[in-house]
Image (cartoon, rainbow, N blue to C red; front, side, top):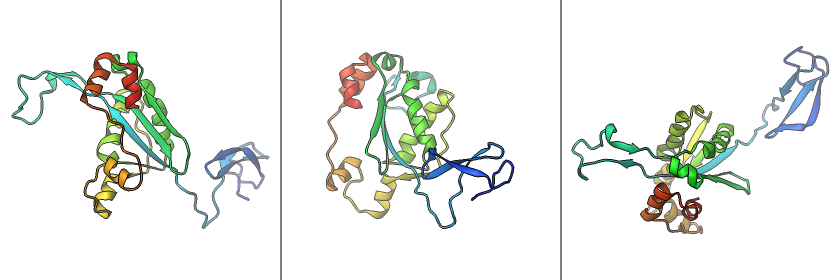
Length: 213
């Protein structure tokens, strides 16, 4: 039995109702200190792997013409910034897929604070996060919104991008998620088009929001 970190005595007792992953919480009979058990040497605890995906809105800006010589629009021309419409996430080995989507009122206000809170909690508790193009897009975009809402950045130890893995190890003719998924027995995406994305930011149509989610 482990020594207590508080009084350094071996008077810990198990409390079976407190668990974190595969480890138990123990309480010292002598001083009442709680601590998480240290796994025996050689015992490996499976990492918590979370996969997630986001849908991001269109942004709005002013421009004199389609071509921009500098390659980027001036920041002063931005009328409305993009926001997170919805997300879906699940734990590897789990059976539940969680998701959240903005309401009509939130879409019209471009307010994604509420829907991002649960995703922040899930990302913060993960050991590894994964997704398709998650390094270049999803993870960076949600971190930017977390920063805007003063939530801080979740503590993630490792990111595994399935797009990078596909490019490096598997010679598919296309590296899109839908192409790979259907070739491995999955279902294709439900069709959603530009008109749907415009309808979301202009009207916040509930049926289109459900479609996006």
